[in-house]
Length: 471
Image (cartoon, rainbow, N blue to C red; front, top):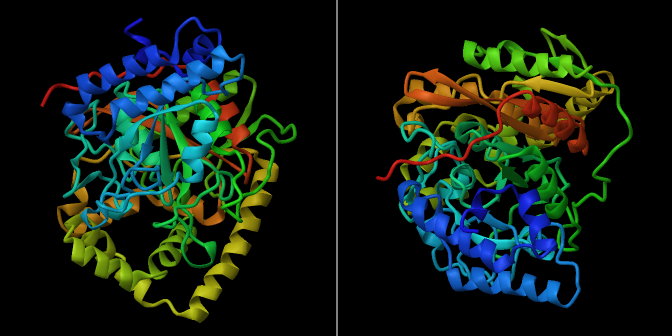
């Protein structure tokens, strides 16, 4: 079956477990798809076919011994270049780190392998994973497989571009301010940023957590179906003793009322009509499934949370980040850092402590909100996916980008999960454009995000695999 790459992760894993197809056959199909389309989009920037096939053979051997291969049995999955995979460079899109070879796997790679996944390749990210656009001097630019005039998103742009084009059945990404949710939105797939502490994180040479564990690039899955996202989350969330901040919360919480809130313009966000239309359609699908959906003008503070998230993120080691970006010479990273200099420069120990205190207050406000409305529908972005490299087109364009991404930046401040659900396409100034919505719930209630996401998904057309035009 040469077209195994078209199957969902759930479908493929079931076939491999039943031994109707082999993991090696699935790996060969995935490698053929990678060879066919990756040159057009540059999503996967490092892969070794012999290693891929060896992993697949291990799955087949386990099955032959009568052992359970795991829930992701033989499923080809990509991982982002900012997490450790033994024998590969943890570049994070940075030439300075091209020889930073990991000696052992990060927890997410180990968890995927224990679940039976086959690591197909490593996906691109902007330098230092700092932008909503994906390109760097080391690996080059990644293109959006649905429309190369649009950004593929960032920082997990390679992950989203790959899975949208059928390279791998699931993709791993990380998200500190939208780096899973926005690429999923831009490439027309689904993506989940789990709650803070849900998925274990650790890199031996390139820590994902900063001082005190206060800022976290949370790992999560990107996929072409919500069922695949659910499967990927279960695999990624397995415990690992290297992460002291991992939380042993159940993946399924108690029953909750089928009640959702819809907020089109949180904190006055100027949401464009095509995005509003998608949100209203998502609300309609929930309503038709028996949910109560209330449209709210106001929700707990979002802009303040976004401002404080930027302050806490950028102020922690800001001077060192600038020095590294200057040494790397990456224009995108330098522009991103320079644009937030005022927030970072004003931070000291007292203000940092005040930010943490305010975070507790805002988190309480949001948890009280979710006690009344278990699910919230929000824009992923105020705009349809941006023209590629928009953030480098001057101060006004840079400000426009950051303003539109307010919900992506704000929600992680409270450690909340957010699911980007693909909703088909709309027309933008750059031509056909993916569009989607964001589903949010309380901490460790990814199950509610996924339950609502499945209803929204079922009410529309399934995500189609993109066929990128050759370069």
